[in-house]
Every structure is written in structure tokens, then in C-alpha cells.
Length: 97
Image (cartoon, rainbow, N blue to C red; front, top):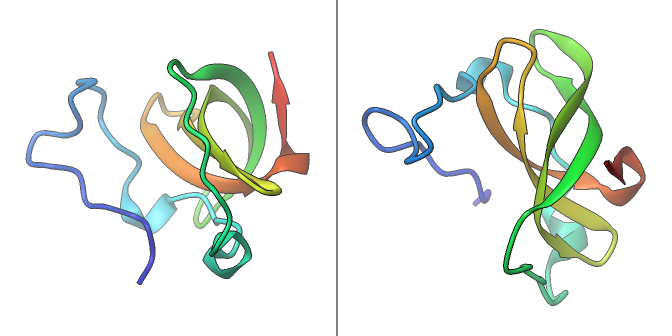
């Protein structure tokens, strides 16, 4: 199955409301990162990324890279509405801030 997890009741420990499932960002395919080592830095790296949300459409968001594997980056981002989201994106859609 996918890597997406449901938030615990009340949201993630950050205290920020999470992006509703109906508007999550589209992710890069999981199959493309299978068998590839996942690197997790000790701290998130500030990034700016392009995402496509299911209902809201395309957006440029600020966030932090929390892992990468091959040509994909896992980011934690803040949506235009101020909600927290997580997504695996193609590295070309992500740049350091």
C-alpha cells in the first residue's frame, strides 16, 4: 500500500491542522523509490516546491525536505490555507530556499 498515514486524533504533534485527504498533493510513484536507500537528514532542509493538489490545483509551497530516495524528495509543506501536508515529489519540483 501507499506510504500515507492518517494523522492521530487532533492532528500531528506540530499542532497545525493537516491538509484534508481530498486535497492532498499528488505524489511521485512509490514504485520508483522501491529498493532505493532512503536518506533522512538530522534536520529538515528548507525548500520551495511545486505541488498539484487534488482539489485546489497547482501551487508553489514552502516546506522542508525530510527525506530523499533516488530522484524523489519527501517534503513536509504548508498549504496556501496554512495546513500541513506531506508528499513524495520528483526532485525537479523541489529547490532549496
